[in-house]
Image (cartoon, rainbow, N blue to C red; front, side, top):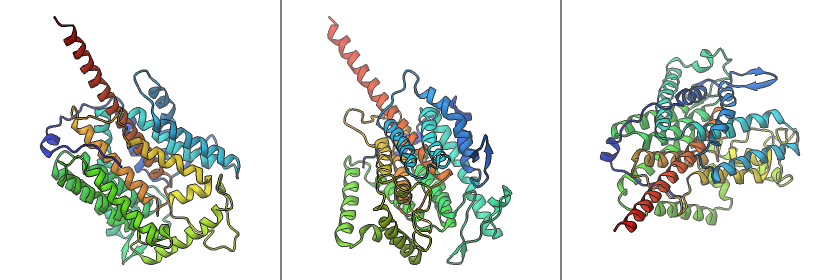
Amino acid sequence: MQFDRHFSPDAQAAIPVAPNSPNSFAIWAVVIGLAVHSNMTFFLAGAKFTIARLVIALLVFPAAVELLQRGRHRGAPDIITCAFCAWLLIAVSQTDQSWSSTAALITEFGGGYLVARSYIFGHPALETFVRALKLICIVLIALASLEQLSQTHLGFVLFGLPIPGYEYRYGWLRAFSTFPHPILFGTFCAAAGAIFLYSERTSLGRVCYGSLCFFGCLLAMSSAPLIAFLIAIFVRLYDGLLHGIRCRWQVLSAAMFALLLVVFLVANRPVSWIVANLTLDPSTGYFRVATWDTAFYYIGLSPYVGYGFDSYAPADDFFGNVSVDSTWLVMIIRFGIPSIIPLLLANVASFWPSRQIYARTSHDPYVGQLCTAFTLSLVVLMFVGLTVHYWNNVWLFWGLCIGIRASLREQCSNARRLTFNGASGLHDVMSSAP
């Protein structure tokens, strides 16, 4: 894993605030769409939409035109994301042909990626997105706090939706805010918090917004998001303490790899061990292990294209018919093992640098900070996805984060290219001087 360089607090505080982006309306529309309850659905021309899905659908074609404009550079993340969406269509055509459900997944993830690649590009657009995300997080977490005080799910009440029920853990009501499940609300808070740990220019800002998102994770009372955000905080502290050491990220990556290697060598069932130990409530951990074991059996019967959206187990198989709490596992069951390969590669390709395009972002320290911010957020989403199934707004948010990180990669590559061309031009001038 490779993160970008660290900038001192003085350098961060001196970064000027960029002017408003010309794409501000589109960016605000997408972020506000994320905050609207995804259980509030409606039909247009026979297609089912949420507010967020409709916003993406309206923006996706202009975004494609924008990305194809001269001066923009397409890269590996774009190709891999297209391959991922194409595989979903191929796989579902071989199973139950649930075109509408598959189209919804592609619109949210692939459309969100495309909109982010096109409109959230450049310093002003990035500033606008972070500013909008901060405001939305304040509103969503304030609403979750009111849930605790009122002991009712106000997010459902405000949008005129039926309350699905009440979940308690350790005597605390688990907050939904405007998400269909507390685990999704907690995941959103963890991923957004990872961004704020680096996007804020001052230590006070990082503490305030980081604490706010941590409080959101606590209100959701969801194990994996809470653990993931604690890991993100550790990474931020680690980076701050060792920012003068260039190889700090290689050391951290090696330590994480060594830890995983020990687990896989020592544990009889390493994946089950990881899943079982990522939960605050042991009973939910063991329940997840049982569903994983059952899912692996059925995956072996249809490993390449999966089962689509139909039931894949007999009616009398309890664990084969319950909720599968893992994004990676759900994708394999629905679309086969090949589906998670481009999904994983799209995440990694968006932040993995090569020697040719590695970012030199000293001209804009804020961009360098955001590179690390969105890399960390993607790591959180990939990690939490082991024990959480993403759908609707969080699934879309994942696509957005990958697209933003890919745009940052392109921006850093352009900066390096301009620096190299400028240095070459200066060398030519000096060589021709008498």
